[in-house]
Image (cartoon, rainbow, N blue to C red; front, side, top):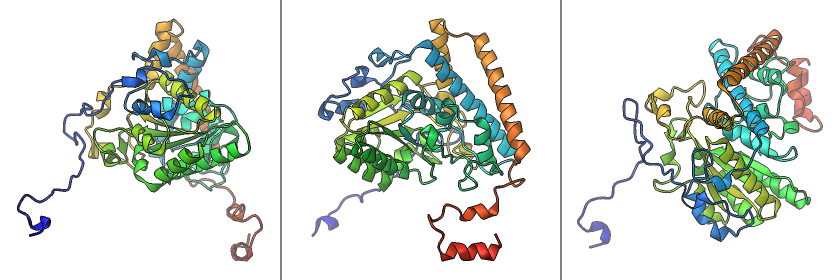
Length: 410
């Protein structure tokens, strides 16, 4: 008798399920928020072998014990960060309403995740490059990318800076350190590592920041990128935005319960940090540490930003169909905008009155930018010339492009 024929119960296939579905009780008790070893800030040049516990703790500054990570940002920069996060949220709320009014075909929000876009944008240099996800418009807003241009791209109108070559919200702005977005999110890691390797090959000190969601860690792109990053010590910061949900699939589908996404770094010989993604100061500190490590020739760092997607995945998504309607309110790490605001108030560098005034000013600016973009046209009202779709396909037009132009008479 073989082992297969031996008596006993058959093995059951384990299919992970979230803690709660619609109508259930929202809870995050299955996630560890302990700071652990990450309460201390090690030297950015420390050997990777001594950093392996950091992927299981949690780097925090606001409300945490890990004051060793406090980056010592001056009040003016903190106010700048608060302004950029507030502006991002107001911008997204306005564009979400524009979608519901039929002015654009698609939109995605980063509500609750603004610190992950804004803090790295302000911390990294002008020659560094971000390889973003589609929840990183805060990067552009923090660097004062013109709002009217962003809206033109969202409306796909005649003044779309990308000339109709991208979907709405898939921005591209090289001069702002913002690499072209892709709906194939995993490709951002591979491109970031390749760019970083090229920078190192040229003897430069520029750093690449790659961003993906936690669901993408289950794809081959993630593992291929980390293999190259570890072997070639690429000066790259590879960040996982763990917002608990990949569209309607919860994070437990992408990694086993009881471990962390940051701990995946260990198998590739690079350090992993797990960071409070709703803490502006902690996000800044982690990016700063990883950038210092990269510029010192110590290679890449994998960072897991622990956060929560408060809004739907996109305007095509209804999160109440797969998670409790009040789940966002139970998220233990709070709201990044409110946390930084409270910190500034506590320092005596901000007030409710100044915040209200700032919101009013930002709203006026957004209204003006939207009006200017709508004067050009919303979805379907105007578009770049059709003939431009043949430009930039090949360096020198081949016979197919020439024939297609002739057929269209352009």
